[in-house]
Image (cartoon, rainbow, N blue to C red; front, side):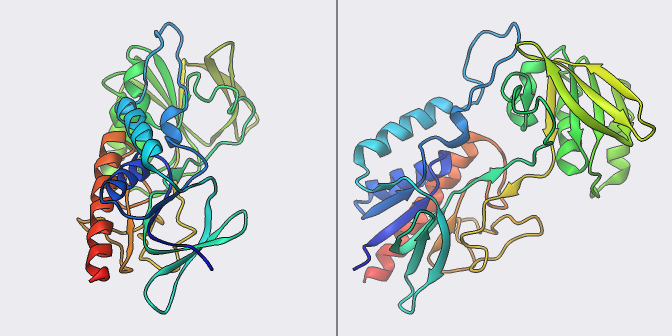
Length: 307
């Protein structure tokens, strides 16, 4: 017989750990399905001449949550979920990626997002060594330095806006152009004197020694240029990991799970938190708070449906 839980949390990042912590505090029968604890928070990031330090604000909170959850959690399934379907009694069946199924009265989705990569030479070699997929997380480390931003939509424009007061100079390579809501405002940002805009150019490779030192770009006429920079921000739109529940819940135009102020989705019994939702902030403290709300909401849902 398939084991049934009161709540199953999908994802072991900040939001998932916070949700699990509250559900465990409620003495519910909880399972957390995730290959690891901490998610992307524990990915290293280093920069030349910057002393080693936590580069993600709130990482210590995630360490504390991971310890708390690990000590109390009896069911940590080292896997991911391929699909969730609703059963006739209102509970949910979760199909595990490596085989097998579990049932749960409620589900909390905290599966996060994944970055769109460039897929060029040197990208993975310098990831975390000057190359970042999140300006909001790492921009302050590049104060007074030359950087490049690669993108083509709202997220790239937002990165430029964040970096203008910090960076000495910004090379913006407009790759995979996407519409922006306020084109006039975007053009004003692109016209800043510390920004050079490269339209019609593609990134060929990321170069460096121990850290990023530059990027090679190629124009439509075949011209190759090397731009000397200490940082590269790859800022395409993020891709929400929504596949397990996309047929059950409402998504926004970008694929984020739409939640209300209580982290409830359009499907009763399914809650969501963190960057997979339309409350996407790419910040650990926000994800922890949203995860706590989702856990509390799932707790109330389970309690009400046990009466």
